[in-house]
Image (tube, rainbow over all chains, first blue to last red; front, side, top):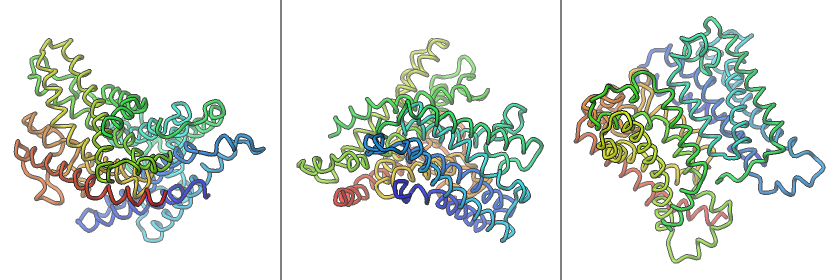
Length: 217
Length: 258
């Protein structure tokens, strides 16, 4: 927890606060209620996953005590996994708390309780997996965070096109907030989750051979 | 200071990798309204402005990411004490690091435009394309880069580089590409660093959202030469304030805490 730092565990909560601030601004300027509800939904589906993905990179990228740690009995991979787990747990707590708050205040516009978790879990797994994999392969925080940022904004820009095409819909990170719970929603969530898990697994396999370098590389 | 910072930044592989990845992504994803499909015989000014608009969508993201650690790394690398011993104050130091690193980052942006001009020259045989690549870069992309660069260099000293990167991505979409007709946003205002006003002036039509109705209507004049100049002036003013007034005390505080 200490090594992750205050940014690591607080970033998902900051993302929630930003979403609420946007929604309040929208409401104050007369935006219709359904659009405001979409902003709040986007906070869960887009903002929190972005925060978790970007913070996860820096959590494992910089470690001045790496040489020392490699001499310890505990596997370095386990330590890195625990750091990412702290960020992921923080993202999960922030997401569940935000979802509960939206349900209680009648601002929730997503699917029912049985599948609501997939609204944030699927894009979080996908973006975090992408971030960790690119960071490990490129050994660069800049390249990894740029890739995640480009993926996030690119999908926001092309969301309508992706949702309209049969090949693009399963990979759209923001299907719930940009289109809704439509045909293929569950497939989309499962595909994103599986891709994310596959990338995390690939990262675990690669990280021993390609330990991350300094951020300024 | 400027020279060394420039050399450090321009030799940074991640600057060139991220610029290349983003540029290629935009070329591939541009769609049939992109600059690659501008008809033959179109003036070089229009062709290269369209390329500047296209690259301006994503390239600043990479620029912001790569500039975000330029000052905070001094503390992490332990060179802050050495820099403190130089006969320069925090203001000169922050300004020097800003100018050097942003200049090197601008070289990557300009190189991208020149590559696009070379690609267009092969098909259109118009040498003016290279001249307009410079002009479009200077008017459309550079003011935004100076604005983004100022915040990227200075803000991480206050909120850390990871948190800056998260907020920057959200801001870039909200403040530049999210239509103000959908939700209240800064998109289409004079404060938009994507270069919308300059591009609209060069194209003779609205490039993205410049001047569309939305919040802060007094910041949404009709696009034109004056509006483009005012927009660039405001962006530069913000950059100067951040670098010269906000940056030095933050840097001093960071060095004290080291």
